[in-house]
Structure formats: structure tokens, C-alpha cells
Length: 208
Image 1: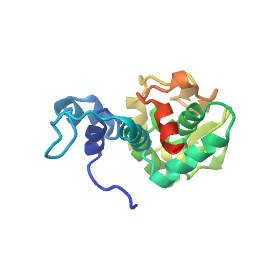
Image 2: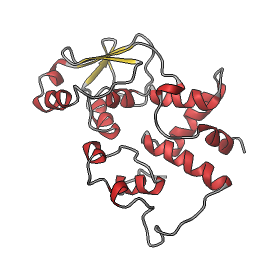
Image 3: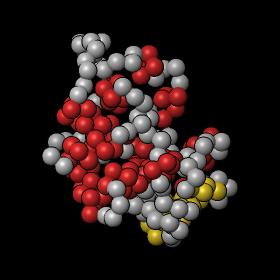
């Protein structure tokens, strides 16, 4: 399946929840989920009760779209989570949170996860003094992510980071807005992940 090129807001409406795909628009009264809290399309207003497989599928689609992943990427992450020790669903969520693009977004260095992916691909970041150009790479405890010197002097990037100084940062991250540096102080636990998802339904879906 090719890359989705439609409206991001349609994805949020399809899942009936904010996936925070459009940066500041998601927090304003212009957010379509607030104005039209029903799925897009001619029959979107009709109340449809979703059960069984449909419920499992919606949870998987919600999580996949939240992190901006393709079906193939998501399936690979699930298979890795399955091979790890512990609870598969919690392993999956922890791995998704540890994606570099997600960390950059959570730290306030990008407007959205898609914007974070663009910045990473454009070589604006370094991890542990090595270039970091793969949005899906996983961070580990003790890793340090910094902006490259050229990016630190970019007025647009400085304004972006300055606007996010008061953003609530997850407890497993430490952000130095003066040095433009992100420190991974621990690995995310289930209670650190706030997205409203029932991961056990995704495990049930892939276990069929």
C-alpha cells in the first residue's frame, strides 16, 4: 500500500479521537474532531456499534496512525515486541514511544511527528555525537540527542523550540532548552503513555 496523501484530519475523525497530526491546530477550536466528532463520509453521522474484529482493527489503525507508520512497519514492530520478554502490548507501546521521531516531537523540537520525521531526514539531529537520519531508530536509556550546530542557528528552529519551553515533557525525558539537548533518563513505562488505546485488542488481532 502506498503512502497516505489525504487529509490528516480525516484520520482523526475516522478514529473519533485526536491523533495530534497537525501541530497547534489540534489544540485550537479549528480542530475538525471538535467541530465534527463523527467519522467522515456520507454516513459518518450514523451511529454504528463496533464489535469484535472491527473493534480490534480500529485500535490497531488508531495506534498505527498516531505514530505515522505504514502497515508493514507496524507489523515489524509488533513481531519484535512479541519476541521480547514481558507483556507484548506494553512492549509494543514502549518501542513506539522510543522512536526517534516521537522523542523529538515529545521534547518540543517539532510541531508534529511528521514534522519531526522531516527534520530528522534533513539531518538536523545527532545522537551520541553520531548522525541520526532514521526516524524509526529507537533511543535507549542514557542516549543524548542534540541539534546540529547549523540547525541551532536556524531562526525558525530556535523560535519553534522557544514556543515549546512550557510544554509538558514526559518524565522519562529531560530537555535542556538552552543547550537544545534531549536526554533519555529512562525507558518509557505503560503509565507514561497517555494515548487512549487498548493494546490487548491489537495483540488479539495479530494472534488470530
